[in-house]
Image 1 (spheres, rainbow, N blue to C red):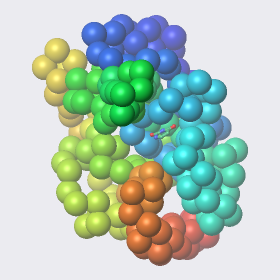
Image 2 (cartoon, rainbow, N blue to C red):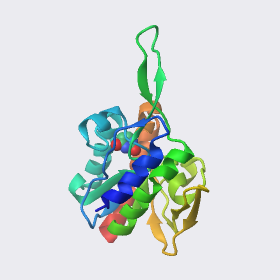
Image 3 (cartoon, rainbow, N blue to C red):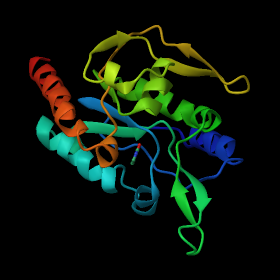
Length: 208
Ligand code: URA
């Protein structure tokens, strides 16, 4: 789906940052939905399968609930490598921890997501979590205010890498933000609200 040249350029731009590995987005060329996450974690970088770590178990439950499979959807993320930081757990040897990607890292890989969206032309895009939401729409509301709502809006494409600026597409997309599946790991009480949102999405898929 993507040109290797574009990927090489993005990898080169990410080089100065503490990020490792590279995971391709996965899914059919005309997916039912495109899910956009934040960045792969350690598990995903090691096995090459998006959302296969702890958050992935919740992600698979999302799909089960929607009565769809990974073959129906395209999964990608705002950054395609794992941003990490070093930490020392209680006197044990230092190890790498996942961290949230910063704006330069997101911009470095932005052309990949732009190209994926252009090629797949998904009928609905589901940003999961605030990083993906910010990447596509350019602001960071409380997720509770936007999750489970349909938004018809142009989305951001990287405009100028040097200046770190984005421009909006002329085409509007249908966006349905969800909580990131990892959110449940930190706040169990979100589970029921997530299922309410998934019911909305399921009803939409049935109608369209
Ligand atoms: N978060 C993501 O955005 N992608 C993954 O593959 C795992 C967690």
